[in-house]
Length: 603
Image (cartoon, rainbow, N blue to C red; front, side, top):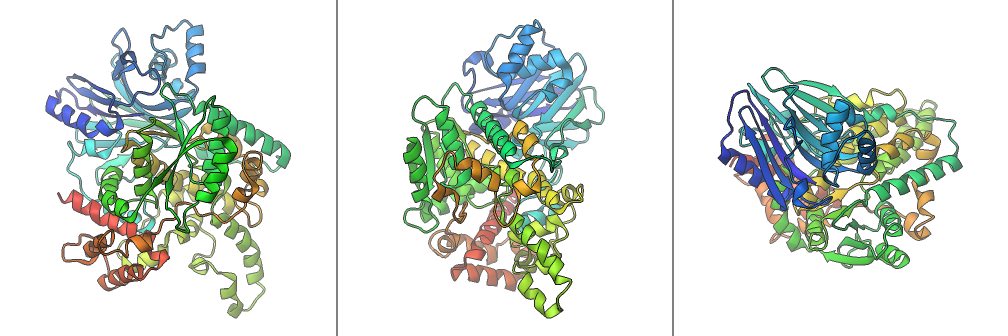
């Protein structure tokens, strides 16, 4: 995993100081080596985190012997060995043993069709001087970030927005701000800044080096795999998913510098740890955030996994003081407000992991693939409630809709339905002028007529990316590559063909995955109430000498956020959190993140 920037403007010679500054911006993504290619009309900037073939022969930017193509590539191609063999069988000579040259030589041999062969996480930019074009692409599931700026005759790409800020003065995008405040994440193409967009996963952009408008095409659309097959039986599906997951975990262990796992104590990370240990000859290292004796800590369940599979486990204690000190740094690396709980603790955890290894596997993505959220259980419940509601007098309806806002939403729009779980109504009352427009969430939802399909579409096309960006930016802040075996196209192809009766039946969540987990994990760990990344925000923000100081910034005279808020209601929300209300804590972390981010943009 690495970081890069790619700049294109006909005839322009980009200043060495500009390129050096961009390389410095990306240093945390690749402290092992760096390099640039610069010539009239283009520049490529790169920082490397060396994992496969870590020697200097695989440094980037990488060019072929003829000088036709130069490549900057961020990510991992998990089927690179098979692709390498295919190239060699067709007479192609490769001089390195890693995956970057496979992408470069694969393009030279197969052209743009190489994109259809790549399995993994990637973002890259390739200059083809013979064709007179530059190609920028992002993996289908959006695991690796890629930002694009097009201003006048300049086109630029980068792994992080901070590099593009050297070309483009950052300005708040208020459409994105409405989504950031409401959901914690601006979906689709929206970055947090006007004039910079996030390239959608599975997209290829072609930039004419001589000038002109870049063109774009979608080379892969993961939602096209969302075609449930009602004929699939439970036993067959369970075996095939188990085999596909084992293959995915095995592929994600490819590393010349070792690896570890994040272990929360939940089903997803525990299953990844179990499968990874089965493929590892020695003891696998695992790492977890510890909250000590706090009720939110899942240490008892982590111990079950550690003992059963003999892991070399490390607990990383994180205190309220650690959180308060690290919060501004996490916002800086996120390049915006924190989209989910656990960003700060994830960054601190990865800083500890970096002392042991550069690679960590996580359980991210299982909920979006297998129906792990309560909204799927509620969907099942509301199906019969809606039928019953037609037969009952109005006075009985409140008892049928226990989820806040469900009657208002009517259970019809999947994007709005999912938003109930993001404190939608509470935030809108504080910021009535910042109402999200119909966007990527709604577009994904409305591609499908079946409501359950719509839920999966919103989770996979919009919500998942926010988790992946959190994982990428918080791990790369510590120069650690995070890998996500559940977010793998070969696995997704089959999982998205599962009928709803297997993936989201009754009132349970992830039933199929839990049956698979029974083969590897204790029953008690699997069948319990999900905690997730709940942290004691209500306690931490109540500490006026720690994180609570940031709440004063929200309502103080220098508040940037106050310009968008109903001040009385914002003050009431802050007071509610200070009184210890758990429901307000996560919202306030989001708003504190917005405030810190707005201040950083103001200089």
